Amino acid sequence: MKVLPFKIPKTEASSIYLQIDEEQYFYDMLHQHPEIQITWIISGEGTLIHGDHLGSFKAGQVFVMGSNVPHVFRCDKKYYEQEMRVLSKSIFFRAEHLRETSKLFPEIRELLQFIQNAERGIRVKDDFSTQMINAFEKVFETNGLKRLNSFFELLHLFGNEESIAYLNELPQKSVKEAEGRRLDDIFRFTLENFGRRITLEEVAEVANMNKASFCRYFKQHTRKTYIDFLNDYRIGQACKLLLNKDNTVSQVCYESGFSNLSNFNRKFKEVIGKTPREHRGS
Image 1 (cartoon, rainbow, N blue to C red):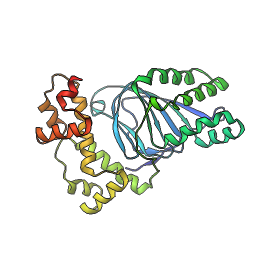
Image 2: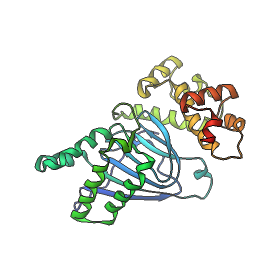
Image 3: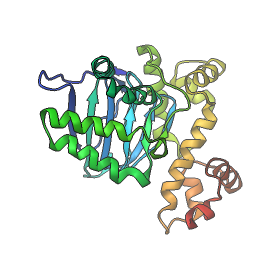
Image 4: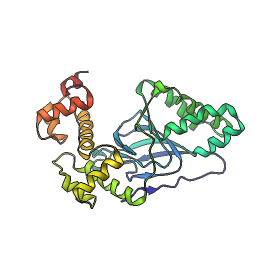
């Protein structure tokens, strides 16, 4: 498995490309492409990887993936085991087209900040998702000059810093194929085995490295230790499990991969800022 250099189809009639994905689960290979991608998740949930960010996605959310930043929407396990459907709409465009246009039309220059921000990945905050989705739909409902105008209006909304949250602390870079292959193997192994005990020796073997080399490699590429990365993912899964009132905190602890309740409560509060019971009641 590798970070695939994904190719987005081009059309002579438009500078932006629109795509609708309706499948059992989203494309699950870590990949990258030169185009900036804006995606609206209409149905489906799972884990989003964008550069060194690992978080969740769910229906109703809007995300931006930067140019040549490795990313993947990996659906939850249930989508692979049951007859379920996911649906998303995406807009792809190349940053250089916007830069070149801004040279002719200075009014567009204020949109150039969006290109820089996209390198860190973006999630639209829930309070602003309806406004963003309405603008998103206008791009799909129009054609020609009207579509381009709707697209600029959509980008303009991203200029409101209060409406967005960054996925990554720093701008992300593309990775070489060999690096991407290792990262993809590590991420897949983690997502498939988080519910049980994982040793550093075991995951280092997945990466075909010794323990010390793996620890250095992983921190260099994700800016965190593997244990912190694993615990962050487990806490994310625990938050999903807590939504089911039938699950006890103890059940959530063990199903999300923690071996004892006290450590689970401590790690949960470190990441979320509340205990599992407080989080469930909020």
